[in-house]
Image 1 (cartoon, one colour):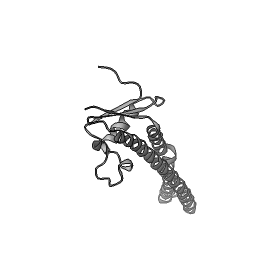
Image 2 (cartoon, rainbow, N blue to C red):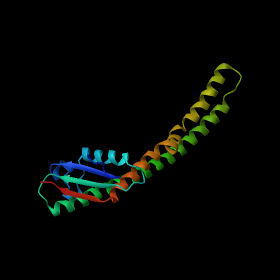
Image 3 (cartoon, rainbow, N blue to C red):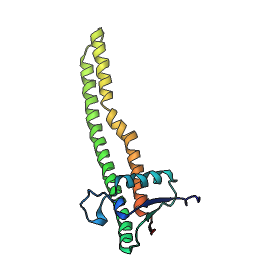
Image 4 (spheres, rainbow, N blue to C red):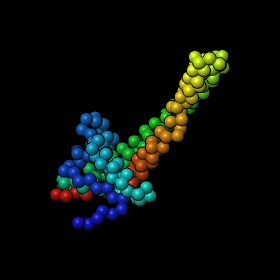
Length: 176
């Protein structure tokens, strides 16, 4: 058995219909990929090095058809280009949400610190309330901190992978 070439992602299908989502009413070249086919391609693409040149080979066990081959190539590239665009939009929305959450969190922190200063220290309940307001104010910043430190970079990495797949060459091979 030969080892696959670096960056090669190969799908073996009985016919071209297995590649696409049958519930999608769009024209053939604009259809969504079948969920299993998309997951297969993405999982194999993640297995390859980030700097490897990805290539997709679709092996179809059907009679050779040049028009189908062209449509498969265009459809796969179009689909991953579309998904990359959606992911970039999602990333922008996440950052907008992060900025809004940061503004709200800072206003909430300021309000809790002002309320904290209105409570007279020196008795147990007052100290308890003061500390509670301080903690609540800082907890209000958790979401923007989470977004700006952790949640954006996996989305960005996924978008880069989709972009790589959208520009990689797609080869269609027919086996009778």
